[in-house]
Amino acid sequence: MSEDPLLVLVGPTAVGKTQLSLRLAAELDGEIVSADSMQVYKFMDIGTAKPTPKERRQIPHHLLDICLPNESFSVARYQRLAWDAIASIHRRGNLPILTGGTGLYVQAVVDGLNFPPRPYDKQYRAQLQAMAREEGPEAVHRLLQQVDPETASRLHPNNLRRVIRALEISHCTGRPMSEHLADEPRQKPPYDLHMYGLTRDRSELYQRVNLRVDEMIFAGLVDEVKGLMEMGYAEGKTALQALGYKEILAYLQGIRTLEESIELLKRDTRRYAKRQLTWFRRDRRIRWFNLSEKTATQITTTISKEMSRLLAK
Image (cartoon, rainbow, N blue to C red; front, side, top):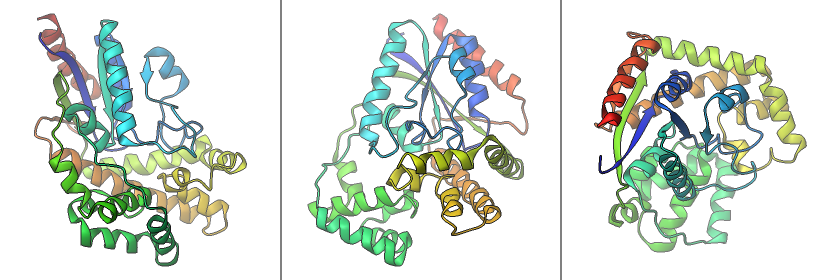
């Protein structure tokens, strides 16, 4: 095989990626490379559904707990670290399994996205941050829709940091970020790609989302967010923006009741799952399995047999 193999497993939150990736890694001598934009942060474990210490002892995991919650972390940095991790796994003779629900992270790795210039305008950024405080993040997102509708379509209004970054690039260069990305040639990574997606019937997926939120609360999500506040991280952009943290933080700050925050978190997570599916459905390289129709064991067996044959060549 002229190219090194890379197994990619994607899907929406709460669909069952973690357990299936662990099974595949055990059967295929694999190591897991996380493609989750929030699992890179330390101390944010319950709300990001990070693999447990036991699971991490069973199978090597990469790109977890890389930086502190008040540090910025870019897609470009993730891409470099992921490529390094995948290369090291190949050198050990094991199979890298890239898995997660952050579509841009996955695309950055498998398609070799280049990234636009990084101009900086402190005053303009402050103006946008003030607009978000006074009028809400939706107002800033509407501004992005006017100047760069393509980028706006893939960014949620609550992802304020990236919305502002896209506006800043457009403001400083006179061209939208989507044009910069289109102009940049892609450095295609030398991988033999095998991409699989997991889904479920919508009603079942949404039930699992609701159950996951309840389990997070039971596991101590409120105390986790309290801990971030006590360490001084809760005022940082990352913790405030992360799904599961901003809702509980609002409760701890007395803005909402706990019940209201939990229902809001469930609603926002269901919407996030829908956006994830929309993103991944655009990639025709992905072969989909419905966990409402097939068991995890059946899907694991199918993928393992396919990969075993390919790796034996």
